[in-house]
Image 1: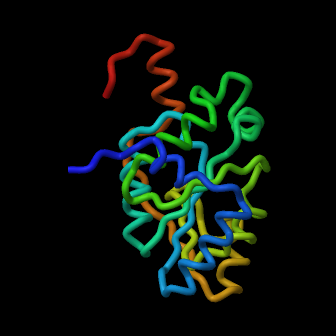
Image 2: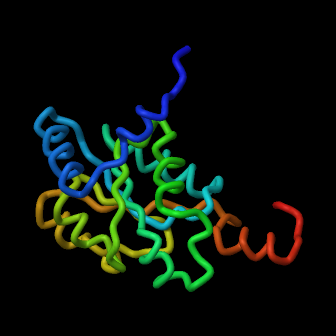
Image 3: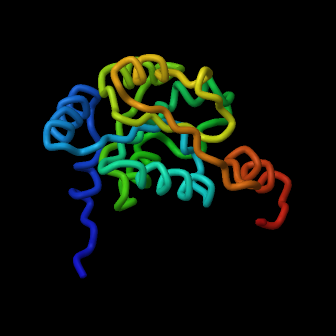
Length: 169
């Protein structure tokens, strides 16, 4: 069995311009491109389940991650725990993720508009009208999916358990 090399992993991490071009190639080849985004600060079972389910909805999965500055603005001065390079590399190791792109804005709207996926996916704490980019993706003929969360998993809860010295669940 061939091992994943550092080069293979880093090849999945794109600039926005390169990710947009790659998505257009995939779509021209008939691939259905799925897009999701998040901080993915501490990877856990909830993230992995969510990402695998998102990937199953199409042929290619693009994951946009918040930059360190964006995470700090959204989650507070003690976050992120892992920097954007580490988070991107960890996500790129998953065979079902085809592209990673980092965005610095508070929302991924610019990234979504540039990539224009066939399917936009978010987790179960959103409704379609609340999802950034939903209107634009649907206007372009795409669909929006809301996936269920795996109960009991969140980066914030894990961080709090670590800080409080609690045992893992």
